[in-house]
Amino acid sequence: MENLSRRTFLQKVGLGVGATAALTIPAFENLANANAHFYGGKKLNIALCGLGRYATYLAEGIAVSQYCRVAGIVTGTPAKAVEWKKMYSIPDANIYNYQNFDQIAKNKDIDLVYVVLPNAMHKEFTIRAAKAGKHVIVEKPMAITAEDCQEMIAVCAKAGVQLAVGYRLHFEPYNLEMKRLGQEKVFGQIRLVEASLGYKSSDPTQWRHKKALSGGGPLMNLGVYCVQCCRYILGEEPVSVTAQFGPVTNQQLFSEIEESITWQLQFPSGALTTSTSTYNCGVDRVFAGADDGFFELSPAISYGPFRGRTSKGELNFPEINQQATQCDEIAKVLLENKKLPSHITGEEGLKDMKVLQAVYKAAETGKRVSLS
Image 1 (tube, helix red, strand yellow):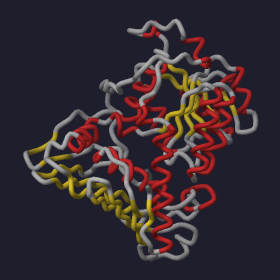
Image 2 (tube, rainbow, N blue to C red):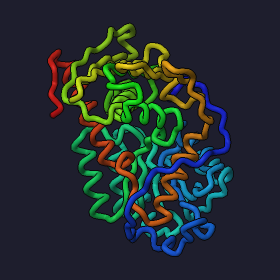
Image 3 (cartoon, rainbow, N blue to C red):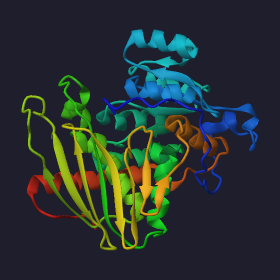
Protein backbone atom coordinates (compact mmCIF):
# COMPACT_ATOMS: atom_id res chain seq x y z
CA MET A 1 0.00 0.00 0.00
CA GLU A 2 1.42 3.33 -1.06
CA ASN A 3 2.77 5.84 1.44
CA LEU A 4 2.95 3.31 4.26
CA SER A 5 6.41 2.84 5.74
CA ARG A 6 8.23 -0.14 4.31
CA ARG A 7 8.72 -2.76 6.97
CA THR A 8 12.16 -4.08 7.85
CA PHE A 9 12.53 -7.47 6.23
CA LEU A 10 13.45 -10.04 8.88
CA GLN A 11 14.05 -13.75 8.68
CA LYS A 12 10.77 -15.61 8.39
CA VAL A 13 9.25 -17.85 11.01
CA GLY A 14 7.18 -20.87 9.97
CA LEU A 15 3.43 -20.88 10.46
CA GLY A 16 1.40 -23.94 9.55
CA VAL A 17 -1.62 -23.53 7.30
CA GLY A 18 -3.34 -26.80 8.05
CA ALA A 19 -3.19 -28.23 4.53
CA THR A 20 -5.59 -31.08 3.89
CA ALA A 21 -5.91 -34.12 1.68
CA ALA A 22 -3.37 -34.98 -1.00
CA LEU A 23 -4.09 -33.85 -4.54
CA THR A 24 -2.33 -34.96 -7.69
CA ILE A 25 -1.43 -31.91 -9.77
CA PRO A 26 -0.36 -32.32 -13.42
CA ALA A 27 1.48 -29.00 -13.45
CA PHE A 28 3.77 -30.31 -10.72
CA GLU A 29 5.19 -33.36 -12.43
CA ASN A 30 8.72 -31.99 -12.05
CA LEU A 31 8.21 -31.87 -8.26
CA ALA A 32 6.38 -35.13 -7.77
CA ASN A 33 9.36 -36.87 -6.19
CA ALA A 34 10.13 -34.08 -3.74
CA ASN A 35 11.07 -35.27 -0.28
CA ALA A 36 8.15 -34.63 2.08
CA HIS A 37 10.45 -33.40 4.85
CA PHE A 38 12.83 -31.13 2.98
CA TYR A 39 11.31 -31.55 -0.48
CA GLY A 40 14.59 -32.98 -1.74
CA GLY A 41 16.02 -29.47 -1.84
CA LYS A 42 13.27 -28.44 -4.28
CA LYS A 43 11.87 -24.94 -4.33
CA LEU A 44 8.71 -23.49 -5.78
CA ASN A 45 9.68 -21.66 -8.97
CA ILE A 46 7.63 -18.46 -9.11
CA ALA A 47 7.18 -16.09 -12.05
CA LEU A 48 6.06 -12.62 -10.98
CA CYS A 49 3.55 -11.18 -13.45
CA GLY A 50 3.74 -7.40 -13.20
CA LEU A 51 6.75 -5.65 -11.68
CA GLY A 52 5.23 -2.76 -9.78
CA ARG A 53 5.89 -1.70 -6.21
CA TYR A 54 4.32 -4.69 -4.48
CA ALA A 55 6.15 -7.11 -6.79
CA THR A 56 9.36 -5.61 -5.42
CA TYR A 57 8.24 -6.42 -1.86
CA LEU A 58 7.35 -9.95 -2.94
CA ALA A 59 10.67 -10.50 -4.66
CA GLU A 60 12.59 -9.31 -1.62
CA GLY A 61 10.54 -11.65 0.55
CA ILE A 62 10.97 -14.60 -1.79
CA ALA A 63 14.73 -13.95 -1.82
CA VAL A 64 14.91 -14.74 1.90
CA SER A 65 12.29 -17.50 1.83
CA GLN A 66 13.11 -21.14 2.39
CA TYR A 67 11.04 -22.89 -0.23
CA CYS A 68 10.64 -20.38 -3.09
CA ARG A 69 12.66 -18.60 -5.72
CA VAL A 70 12.02 -15.85 -8.24
CA ALA A 71 12.46 -17.96 -11.34
CA GLY A 72 10.78 -15.78 -13.94
CA ILE A 73 9.17 -12.42 -14.67
CA VAL A 74 6.44 -11.01 -16.90
CA THR A 75 6.69 -7.32 -17.71
CA GLY A 76 5.78 -4.85 -20.41
CA THR A 77 8.81 -2.67 -19.60
CA PRO A 78 12.08 -3.83 -21.23
CA ALA A 79 14.20 -1.75 -18.82
CA LYS A 80 12.66 -3.57 -15.87
CA ALA A 81 13.40 -6.90 -17.52
CA VAL A 82 17.09 -6.00 -17.73
CA GLU A 83 17.18 -4.81 -14.12
CA TRP A 84 15.37 -7.80 -12.66
CA LYS A 85 17.33 -10.28 -14.78
CA LYS A 86 20.55 -9.03 -13.20
CA MET A 87 19.15 -8.70 -9.68
CA TYR A 88 17.67 -12.20 -9.47
CA SER A 89 19.81 -14.08 -12.02
CA ILE A 90 16.82 -14.84 -14.23
CA PRO A 91 17.63 -16.61 -17.50
CA ASP A 92 16.38 -15.08 -20.74
CA ALA A 93 14.14 -18.11 -21.32
CA ASN A 94 12.16 -17.19 -18.19
CA ILE A 95 11.50 -13.57 -19.13
CA TYR A 96 8.15 -12.83 -20.78
CA ASN A 97 6.09 -9.85 -21.86
CA TYR A 98 2.31 -9.61 -21.99
CA GLN A 99 2.19 -10.63 -25.65
CA ASN A 100 4.29 -13.81 -25.50
CA PHE A 101 3.20 -14.81 -21.98
CA ASP A 102 1.30 -17.91 -23.17
CA GLN A 103 4.61 -19.49 -24.19
CA ILE A 104 5.20 -20.06 -20.47
CA ALA A 105 3.22 -23.27 -20.95
CA LYS A 106 6.37 -24.81 -22.47
CA ASN A 107 8.58 -23.76 -19.57
CA LYS A 108 9.12 -26.58 -17.08
CA ASP A 109 11.18 -24.25 -14.87
CA ILE A 110 8.12 -22.21 -13.86
CA ASP A 111 5.67 -23.80 -11.41
CA LEU A 112 3.48 -20.89 -10.39
CA VAL A 113 2.55 -17.44 -11.67
CA TYR A 114 1.99 -14.70 -9.09
CA VAL A 115 -0.28 -12.07 -10.67
CA VAL A 116 0.61 -8.61 -9.31
CA LEU A 117 -1.06 -6.50 -12.01
CA PRO A 118 -3.74 -3.79 -11.78
CA ASN A 119 -7.03 -5.28 -10.58
CA ALA A 120 -8.75 -5.26 -13.97
CA MET A 121 -5.96 -7.45 -15.40
CA HIS A 122 -6.19 -10.16 -12.73
CA LYS A 123 -8.80 -12.19 -14.57
CA GLU A 124 -7.01 -12.29 -17.92
CA PHE A 125 -3.64 -13.34 -16.61
CA THR A 126 -4.99 -15.78 -14.05
CA ILE A 127 -6.88 -17.53 -16.83
CA ARG A 128 -3.91 -17.46 -19.20
CA ALA A 129 -1.62 -18.85 -16.51
CA ALA A 130 -4.08 -21.61 -15.66
CA LYS A 131 -4.47 -22.60 -19.31
CA ALA A 132 -0.67 -22.75 -19.46
CA GLY A 133 -0.78 -25.35 -16.67
CA LYS A 134 0.63 -23.12 -13.93
CA HIS A 135 -0.65 -22.67 -10.42
CA VAL A 136 -1.68 -19.11 -9.61
CA ILE A 137 -1.53 -16.68 -6.73
CA VAL A 138 -3.44 -13.50 -7.51
CA GLU A 139 -3.32 -10.33 -5.46
CA LYS A 140 -6.34 -8.73 -3.81
CA PRO A 141 -8.96 -7.93 -4.80
CA MET A 142 -9.19 -11.13 -6.78
CA ALA A 143 -10.91 -9.35 -9.69
CA ILE A 144 -13.29 -6.45 -10.22
CA THR A 145 -16.57 -8.39 -10.30
CA ALA A 146 -17.90 -11.54 -8.67
CA GLU A 147 -18.63 -12.94 -12.13
CA ASP A 148 -14.94 -12.59 -13.05
CA CYS A 149 -13.96 -14.40 -9.86
CA GLN A 150 -16.31 -17.28 -10.67
CA GLU A 151 -14.83 -17.60 -14.16
CA MET A 152 -11.28 -17.63 -12.78
CA ILE A 153 -12.18 -20.37 -10.32
CA ALA A 154 -13.86 -22.46 -13.02
CA VAL A 155 -10.94 -22.17 -15.47
CA CYS A 156 -8.37 -23.12 -12.83
CA ALA A 157 -10.43 -26.12 -11.78
CA LYS A 158 -10.80 -27.27 -15.39
CA ALA A 159 -7.06 -26.86 -15.95
CA GLY A 160 -6.25 -28.88 -12.83
CA VAL A 161 -4.23 -26.11 -11.19
CA GLN A 162 -4.67 -24.42 -7.84
CA LEU A 163 -5.68 -20.82 -7.31
CA ALA A 164 -4.72 -18.83 -4.23
CA VAL A 165 -5.40 -15.21 -3.31
CA GLY A 166 -2.59 -13.24 -1.66
CA TYR A 167 -4.10 -13.18 1.82
CA ARG A 168 -0.78 -12.61 3.61
CA LEU A 169 -2.47 -11.80 6.94
CA HIS A 170 -3.65 -15.40 7.27
CA PHE A 171 -0.01 -16.22 8.04
CA GLU A 172 0.73 -13.23 10.29
CA PRO A 173 0.83 -13.93 14.09
CA TYR A 174 -1.08 -10.88 15.33
CA ASN A 175 -3.91 -11.37 12.86
CA LEU A 176 -4.01 -15.10 13.54
CA GLU A 177 -4.45 -14.24 17.21
CA MET A 178 -7.30 -11.84 16.40
CA LYS A 179 -8.93 -14.65 14.46
CA ARG A 180 -8.46 -17.08 17.36
CA LEU A 181 -9.74 -14.65 20.00
CA GLY A 182 -12.83 -13.97 17.94
CA GLN A 183 -13.75 -17.40 16.67
CA GLU A 184 -13.05 -19.12 20.02
CA LYS A 185 -15.00 -16.39 21.84
CA VAL A 186 -12.21 -15.94 24.36
CA PHE A 187 -13.88 -12.72 25.56
CA GLY A 188 -17.41 -13.95 24.95
CA GLN A 189 -19.79 -13.03 22.17
CA ILE A 190 -18.45 -10.28 19.95
CA ARG A 191 -20.83 -7.35 19.55
CA LEU A 192 -18.80 -4.87 17.50
CA VAL A 193 -15.80 -4.96 15.19
CA GLU A 194 -14.24 -1.80 13.82
CA ALA A 195 -11.73 -2.29 10.98
CA SER A 196 -10.44 0.63 8.93
CA LEU A 197 -7.54 1.26 6.58
CA GLY A 198 -6.48 4.36 4.68
CA TYR A 199 -3.64 6.52 3.49
CA LYS A 200 -3.18 9.83 1.72
CA SER A 201 -3.13 9.39 -2.05
CA SER A 202 -2.40 12.41 -4.24
CA ASP A 203 -1.09 11.12 -7.58
CA PRO A 204 -3.82 11.33 -10.25
CA THR A 205 -1.68 9.39 -12.74
CA GLN A 206 -1.45 6.34 -10.49
CA TRP A 207 -3.41 3.39 -11.88
CA ARG A 208 -5.41 3.07 -8.68
CA HIS A 209 -7.11 6.38 -9.59
CA LYS A 210 -8.23 4.98 -12.96
CA LYS A 211 -11.48 3.08 -12.51
CA ALA A 212 -10.97 1.05 -15.68
CA LEU A 213 -7.86 -0.48 -14.10
CA SER A 214 -8.73 -0.44 -10.41
CA GLY A 215 -12.44 -1.23 -10.50
CA GLY A 216 -12.97 1.39 -7.80
CA GLY A 217 -11.24 3.45 -5.16
CA PRO A 218 -10.02 2.71 -1.64
CA LEU A 219 -12.78 0.14 -1.09
CA MET A 220 -11.21 -2.11 -3.72
CA ASN A 221 -7.64 -1.44 -2.69
CA LEU A 222 -7.94 -1.25 1.10
CA GLY A 223 -11.50 -2.13 2.02
CA VAL A 224 -11.00 -5.73 0.96
CA TYR A 225 -8.63 -6.12 3.92
CA CYS A 226 -11.27 -4.74 6.29
CA VAL A 227 -13.95 -7.07 4.95
CA GLN A 228 -11.59 -10.04 5.25
CA CYS A 229 -10.62 -9.08 8.78
CA CYS A 230 -14.21 -8.79 10.00
CA ARG A 231 -15.13 -12.11 8.41
CA TYR A 232 -12.22 -14.06 9.91
CA ILE A 233 -12.55 -12.54 13.37
CA LEU A 234 -16.23 -13.46 13.56
CA GLY A 235 -16.01 -16.70 11.57
CA GLU A 236 -19.34 -15.78 9.96
CA GLU A 237 -20.64 -14.45 6.68
CA PRO A 238 -22.47 -11.07 6.68
CA VAL A 239 -26.18 -11.02 5.94
CA SER A 240 -26.64 -7.37 5.00
CA VAL A 241 -24.78 -4.11 4.44
CA THR A 242 -25.42 -0.38 4.62
CA ALA A 243 -22.87 2.13 3.31
CA GLN A 244 -22.14 5.80 2.74
CA PHE A 245 -19.70 7.60 0.46
CA GLY A 246 -17.56 10.17 2.24
CA PRO A 247 -17.25 13.79 1.11
CA VAL A 248 -15.08 14.59 -1.91
CA THR A 249 -12.47 17.19 -0.97
CA ASN A 250 -10.67 17.13 -4.33
CA GLN A 251 -12.98 16.66 -7.30
CA GLN A 252 -10.18 16.58 -9.86
CA LEU A 253 -8.19 13.93 -7.99
CA PHE A 254 -11.25 11.78 -7.33
CA SER A 255 -13.19 12.24 -10.55
CA GLU A 256 -13.42 8.49 -11.29
CA ILE A 257 -13.28 6.82 -7.88
CA GLU A 258 -14.53 7.43 -4.37
CA GLU A 259 -12.27 9.32 -1.97
CA SER A 260 -13.67 7.59 1.13
CA ILE A 261 -16.39 5.11 1.94
CA THR A 262 -17.83 3.81 5.21
CA TRP A 263 -19.95 0.68 5.60
CA GLN A 264 -21.64 -1.48 8.19
CA LEU A 265 -22.05 -5.25 8.01
CA GLN A 266 -24.65 -7.19 9.98
CA PHE A 267 -23.80 -10.80 10.91
CA PRO A 268 -26.05 -13.75 11.91
CA SER A 269 -24.89 -13.64 15.55
CA GLY A 270 -26.06 -10.05 15.80
CA ALA A 271 -22.53 -8.66 15.62
CA LEU A 272 -22.11 -5.38 13.79
CA THR A 273 -18.95 -4.33 11.98
CA THR A 274 -18.14 -0.83 10.83
CA SER A 275 -15.31 0.11 8.48
CA THR A 276 -13.87 3.00 6.54
CA SER A 277 -11.44 2.87 3.65
CA THR A 278 -10.02 6.17 2.48
CA TYR A 279 -7.41 7.92 0.36
CA ASN A 280 -7.78 11.07 2.44
CA CYS A 281 -5.89 10.21 5.63
CA GLY A 282 -3.92 7.53 7.41
CA VAL A 283 -5.74 4.92 9.49
CA ASP A 284 -4.81 1.30 10.24
CA ARG A 285 -6.85 -0.14 13.09
CA VAL A 286 -8.93 -3.14 14.18
CA PHE A 287 -10.97 -3.26 17.40
CA ALA A 288 -13.30 -5.99 18.63
CA GLY A 289 -15.62 -5.44 21.59
CA ALA A 290 -17.17 -8.50 23.25
CA ASP A 291 -19.30 -9.30 26.30
CA ASP A 292 -16.31 -9.88 28.57
CA GLY A 293 -13.57 -7.67 27.14
CA PHE A 294 -11.92 -6.40 23.97
CA PHE A 295 -8.94 -6.98 21.69
CA GLU A 296 -7.35 -4.65 19.16
CA LEU A 297 -4.45 -3.97 16.80
CA SER A 298 -3.02 -0.65 15.64
CA PRO A 299 -1.23 -0.81 13.23
CA ALA A 300 -3.31 -3.79 12.23
CA ILE A 301 -3.63 -4.59 8.52
CA SER A 302 -0.71 -3.00 6.64
CA TYR A 303 2.87 -4.29 6.54
CA GLY A 304 3.56 -3.72 10.24
CA PRO A 305 5.19 -3.70 12.64
CA PHE A 306 1.91 -4.46 14.39
CA ARG A 307 0.96 -3.57 17.94
CA GLY A 308 -1.86 -5.15 19.90
CA ARG A 309 -3.53 -5.50 23.24
CA THR A 310 -6.55 -7.04 24.92
CA SER A 311 -8.51 -6.10 28.03
CA LYS A 312 -6.15 -8.47 29.84
CA GLY A 313 -2.87 -7.03 28.56
CA GLU A 314 -0.47 -6.54 25.67
CA LEU A 315 -0.08 -8.87 22.70
CA ASN A 316 3.51 -9.75 21.77
CA PHE A 317 4.36 -11.85 18.76
CA PRO A 318 7.44 -12.02 16.53
CA GLU A 319 7.59 -9.69 13.57
CA ILE A 320 7.77 -11.70 10.38
CA ASN A 321 8.46 -11.09 6.74
CA GLN A 322 4.86 -11.33 5.59
CA GLN A 323 5.66 -11.97 1.93
CA ALA A 324 8.26 -14.66 2.62
CA THR A 325 6.02 -16.43 5.12
CA GLN A 326 2.99 -16.41 2.85
CA CYS A 327 4.91 -17.76 -0.12
CA ASP A 328 6.70 -20.40 1.94
CA GLU A 329 3.50 -21.73 3.50
CA ILE A 330 1.83 -21.95 0.09
CA ALA A 331 4.96 -23.57 -1.34
CA LYS A 332 5.04 -26.25 1.35
CA VAL A 333 1.50 -27.27 0.47
CA LEU A 334 2.13 -27.35 -3.27
CA LEU A 335 5.51 -29.08 -2.98
CA GLU A 336 3.75 -31.89 -1.14
CA ASN A 337 1.04 -32.06 -3.82
CA LYS A 338 -1.65 -31.19 -1.29
CA LYS A 339 -4.72 -29.04 -1.57
CA LEU A 340 -4.52 -25.41 -0.45
CA PRO A 341 -6.56 -24.51 2.66
CA SER A 342 -9.92 -23.02 1.75
CA HIS A 343 -9.36 -19.68 3.51
CA ILE A 344 -6.79 -18.54 0.92
CA THR A 345 -8.37 -19.92 -2.26
CA GLY A 346 -10.32 -18.31 -5.06
CA GLU A 347 -13.58 -19.18 -3.32
CA GLU A 348 -12.54 -16.90 -0.46
CA GLY A 349 -11.73 -14.11 -2.90
CA LEU A 350 -15.18 -14.53 -4.43
CA LYS A 351 -16.83 -14.11 -1.02
CA ASP A 352 -14.99 -10.84 -0.45
CA MET A 353 -15.88 -9.55 -3.91
CA LYS A 354 -19.57 -10.20 -3.34
CA VAL A 355 -19.39 -8.07 -0.20
CA LEU A 356 -17.48 -5.27 -1.95
CA GLN A 357 -20.06 -5.11 -4.73
CA ALA A 358 -22.84 -4.97 -2.15
CA VAL A 359 -21.06 -2.13 -0.32
CA TYR A 360 -20.96 -0.07 -3.51
CA LYS A 361 -24.63 -0.83 -4.22
CA ALA A 362 -25.63 0.19 -0.69
CA ALA A 363 -23.69 3.45 -0.93
CA GLU A 364 -25.10 4.26 -4.36
CA THR A 365 -28.73 3.54 -3.45
CA GLY A 366 -28.75 4.57 0.21
CA LYS A 367 -30.56 1.31 0.99
CA ARG A 368 -29.71 -1.78 2.99
CA VAL A 369 -28.50 -4.55 0.68
CA SER A 370 -29.08 -8.19 1.54
CA LEU A 371 -26.17 -10.63 1.23
CA SER A 372 -28.07 -13.80 2.04
